Amino acid sequence: MKILLLSHGNLASEMKETVQMILGKTENVDTYSLQVGEDTNAYENEIRSYVTNHQKEGVLIFTDLLGGTPFITSAKVYDSLLEENKDKVRIITGMNLPMLLEVINSVNESSNEEDLSAMAIEAGTRGIVDFIEKRKGNR
Image (cartoon, rainbow, N blue to C red; front, side):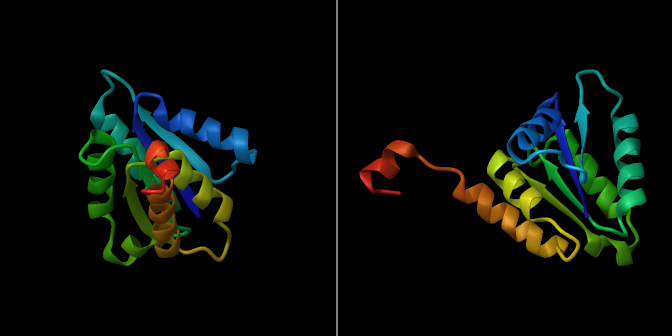
């Protein structure tokens, strides 16, 4: 299973670096960051090539923002896959550190894309807390 982090600017590479600070070296995590002025066709081609090369082993794609260029690009790549390969690729938006830590720490040979996707969403949501409200016992 491969994990691909996509973002505007350097967020994806910084997220990977932060994950590695906490969990240690991550062999199965790659990043593509869309920089200001970058050719979006070239960006799409890089992502398409990556997904095509790794789709058989499974690719879990995390993007920073629903509706942003990294998400739209990954959705285009997904839509272009042959039907039999689509079940090995998942796209999750709203990437945050809790979800990445949970998934990257849990991924192994027996992990499947659907379970990891659900785990990411659960961990990502659970990681969003209003501290003051929680302290008051409201959340």
